[in-house]
Image 1 (cartoon, rainbow over the protein chains, first blue to last red):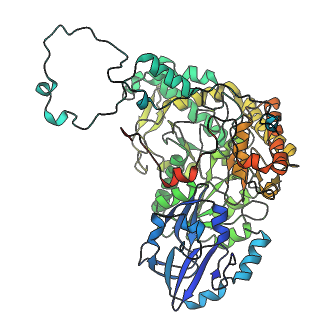
Image 2 (image 1 turned 90 degrees about the vertical axis):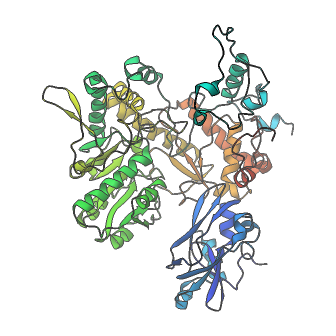
Image 3 (image 1 turned 120 degrees about the vertical axis):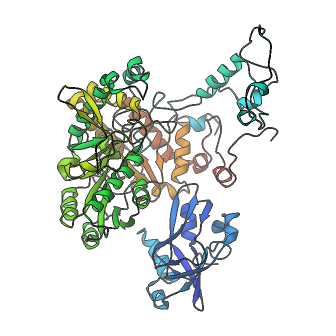
Amino acid sequence: MSNYPDDCYYTKDHEWIRVTGDTGRVGITHYAQESLGDVVYVDLPKVGESYQSGDPFGSVESVKAVSELFIPVSGEIVEINGQLADAPELVNSSPYDEGWMVTVKFSNTGELDSLLSSTEYEDFIKEGKL
Amino acid sequence: MSETSKHHRIRKVRTHISQNEGLIFEKSRPGSRAFDLPPSDVPEIPVQELLPAALLRTDDLEGMPEVAEPEVVRHYTRISTWNYGTDTGMFPLGSCTMKYNPKFNEWAARLDGFARTHPLAPEVLTQGNLRLIRQLEEELLEITGLAAISLQPAAGAHGEMTGVMMIRAALAARNEPGRKRVLIPDSAHGTNPASAVLCGFSVDTIPSNERGLTDMAVLEKRMDDSVAAIMLTNPNTLGMFEENIEKICALVHERGGYVYMDGANMNAMCGVTRPGDMGIDVMHLNLHKTFSTPHGGGGPGCGPVLVAKGLEPFLPYPVLKQEADGQIRLDYDRPQSIGRVRFFLGNFGMMVRALGYIRAHGPDGLRMATETAVLNANYVRHHLSEAYDMSFDGPILHEVVFSDKRQQQHGVKNADIAKRLIDYGFHPPTMSFPLIAPGAIMIEPTESESREELDLFIDAMKSISAECAEDPELVKSAPHWARLTRLDEVSAARNPVLRWKAGK
């Protein structure tokens, strides 16, 4: 499997979003989990909270550092991945599937147009402008 | 290669007997004790008859260690030999300023008159101590070029929050509650956004430009009438001086905002230039960094907060006030004060040490300490720039940030280099900070190090870089010579065992 599946959109803050209807599942990319190292704690928001695109919605803690999570699109949190409380290592082992973090219901679908495709994101990482 | 020849470049340390030592709880034997009382010559009365039940302890005391005096002494002496501090060698922990703590200051702080004053003793009996505090205040005001000061805060981040509380109070007095945003460059200390948020502000991060300095174009765009303050660290966490600091101050002042300067890196400016002259409105100092009071144990610390004239009314009370008769009194009559931020007058012992440091150096000595700290950082940078990449290229002051980019080609990361440095007899530098520098290795030698110690450190770092290419596994599995080899930090963080329990 590619390190950057092409059924997701990406942000320059290293989050991905996979869209189904008017919701999208959000997590951090392979590159992000690798740079962070072993994840030991994930702090997620509560279901029902609303965010504007780019807002911090939680944080992820590795043995190296605590990093904020930024929501790729505006909307309401409708689901969180409760499994991460006991198994934060899923973010490392399966960043795009079992390691997902939240599901967000969009308030503005147009925002997706400003996100990166998997090839654009890969190029962005290669440029090394991080 | 034999085990020893792998380490042939290590000059500073040798393997050495290191006593194994369990926990004090594990040494416990029923009946062991460090004292023996003579037989009682009065009748014994059960404690239950003397004290009400509510005052008696009923929880389980099982497991409290019972140990004889020599065992206690040996236990703590043995584990003390595992320690590493500035009294043992170079401690290049960037951003933390681990400079040597002069023993003269320790002597002064232990003098009976200072160490044994009761904090509730009346002013009339504590004039000497109050005069010492007042003198330290005056010295720090002269060093920073600001107008007024409080020594109450117990640490840098506490001083920072006190400063932001004063900004909030000043905005309330100006009747401008709409100023809700605080601008913070991404090269600032992590405590800056924390202080702003705790005081009810929202944080707007200003990116750094490719040179590692605040991006002026972005700052100009974001600066408007909703901004309460900008909080910046100068020199910043890359060890770089914000060369636009006067422009930044002018821009923020023009739109009615305040400029907060995190003075954690004042040791790169002390005696050379003054924040007050740059236009700073509020700042804090860390006495344990710039003024050599001890770090450690989480305190006690002292993080003075200093302000320009306009913010003086909002300082925490009480403030020291010299009366016409020469006596110093505590002034509580401060209607606009944000109130107290700490009991009594703060951590007095730290003030004694800091004043000792300042007076022992004098103005020329303080300047020389700053210049030596900057020289030492640049010496390290010069000699390691062939072996390691710099995160940002540009002139640096008191610390230098390298990246592990070149060593990553061999699969070695910054943390591996840090662990290997332990084998060479040095405390590791700061890793992976600041966050804007990927794979950061942040080195701050301070002025305390001799050229000989710096050369040993440089040789060690060069040697490790060579090992990364020749034998990357050696570095990735380091340390090899330490009492314990690579620890499982992941399990420790995921399943922390925070206290000892009997039978487990």
